Image (cartoon, rainbow, N blue to C red; front, side, top):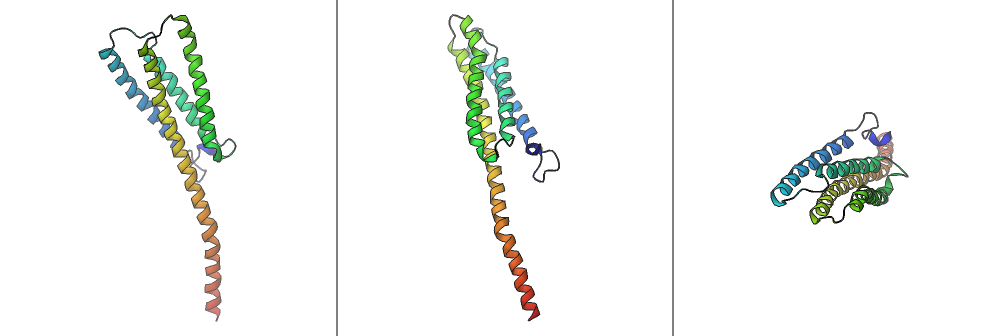
Amino acid sequence: MKAFKNKEGSKPSLFYLKQILRILFCMGVFLLLHLYVVEVYYNGLLFFSLESFYIFHSLCAIGVCGLLLLPIGGNMYIGYRFIVLTFLQMLACLAFLLPPLLSQSKVGEWEILSFMFAFFVALFWEVYFAILLLRREEKKKKISIIKKVFIPLQSDLKFVNLHFRKA
């Protein structure tokens, strides 16, 4: 696919792989930090496991970043795709949380805060990735505009140089 190739389109790009590794590393660090905070400041057991929260949000973030990278409808709709994918991710969060929430009589604030913290960490990485893609597309547009302007100027200068050499 063109989206997973480098600028020349020949070799596979490491751009997406780097983002996956960043997401996984960051989510792992925040999971360890979160486990420590819950163990130190919360005296009870959480109804939901933090690992499942972080795995769910990591997979969602990797999926969103992968779908943002695909050239669906041209690369000019990255912002719209991001909004739609974030909305779909919120619906997936509801589907993930709704069955356990309905089976439990009362949900504690630590469970809600834990889920939302993992959600916002993943959302941060999705926004960061979308901004990187937008900057990348902006650079491509600037380079193409510069090429459109300067290549005809270079050919005109060659013509002028040839004309003066003959005279």
